[in-house]
Length: 181
Image (cartoon, rainbow, N blue to C red; front, side, top):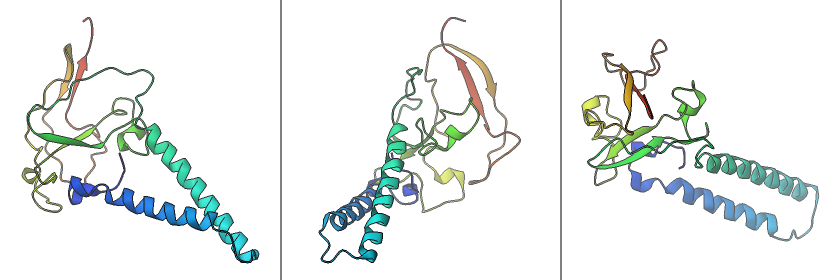
């Protein structure tokens, strides 16, 4: 739900930035609502800056929450993994919470799904460079819908972590067709 790199640590700590944001918002609101002892020019400027910052935060929050709502036209899909606990790193209908939403229409609603262990970690180690250290790596993926497979893109070598292949940004993929064939 909140975009920040919690995955470097553990899923259980993902609420810390939210708690920090709530604490900062509470302090800001108290300062805005507190009566000024002697309203002077500096106090008015400071209060105006706080109101602008609070308004900007509300706009950002609205965009974040909008991304959690399904788009008007959507289809129901099953979860593509069967065993283990998973979480979604990138997903949603807003570029504020889903990096893929900025891309082409084929990957617009793409999801980054990772398996987490009992400690809430997605990998063995802080930021391991070997793909085998990630719990989702080599996990079996199941079809999210019934239908016919229209195309399969396979055979690409595994990309190094944090790299991007501009020639083939989608990497390996499967294109199912749901409905009458």
